[in-house]
Image: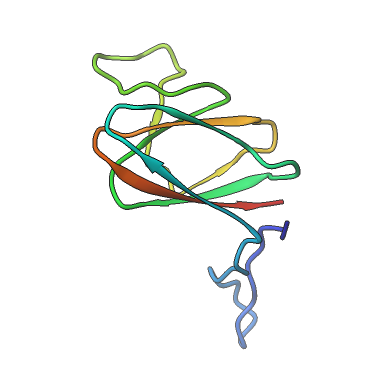
Length: 106
């Protein structure tokens, strides 16, 4: 698995361009049906992209929020990237059918 790092451009300025991940998942979600995805060994960072809104919970299954959740462990709406070095599973759920792309980096 590749490390997450950016590259310097010709002027020495860090860029936002990354190597393609060697560990990529495409997860199809049906409306309201949660899925739990095992984080690959050695993964420290995950990048998310999706065809629609989705919720993620770290280390546990996710559920669609239907009321206020102020306990501190609510699922998170469509993050772009997260540090997941100590996370073993990702819980995903969506309000409508969509596909979520996950790119893992070590």
